[in-house]
Length: 277
Image (cartoon, rainbow, N blue to C red; front, side, top):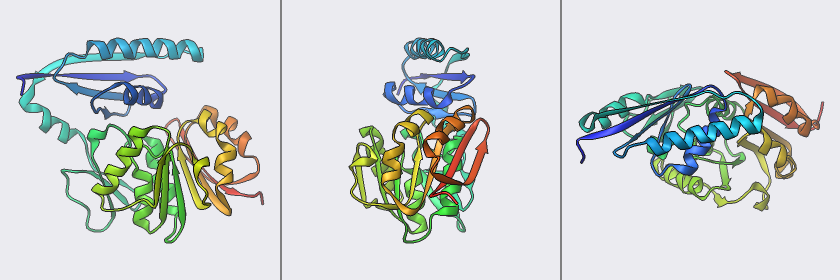
């Protein structure tokens, strides 16, 4: 082990999820999500990552026509402190009936435990969209329901539904996410009925609840696919929506009744039911 390691603290003014996607696709190591950004740790100098983040922020700002501020602070620390500091920084979360905790933390004796390995970089429950989706699952998923987790990421949402007693399928267009979901399922001693790389239109089943925590543009693009796999009386949980794009998303789901709207910070989760009143 080297004597020192590098810690890069990244703060972004907006579009947290897009930066998260960028890091997930480009980093060969895990990273920690914070309220306003990320923390990346490596035994190698992280100057190249700083450059990549700044270039991505500049391209994103140009594409969206808005200002996006990013601040990167890199420090050199003693390697002996790395593991302890990292473990202290990842705290367990209580979200409704769920208790999300890292692998080194003890389970809760009264709540539904979801054990997550934060080294897998994302889907630890700290982001508002994940937390809101879990609240919706706690309320709308019942034992015996057929559930589909679209864009499963770390698998945390599907795992939560399985632990309620649902039969859960999952899919993601990213093979890394599919593998992470399988690993986290094994970690939690649960099993998905089916899991595949690709979109939801590859399934031949229909579902009582479909959850999709993605981004607004994708939710509009796959609207017909999501509707097509939902049972007549089914419930659709849509998350990953910035509040300024909420009306844009809802235009594609005008034939659905809004059961509930969960807002946290600048993010919105919509719970919709097939068929208008």
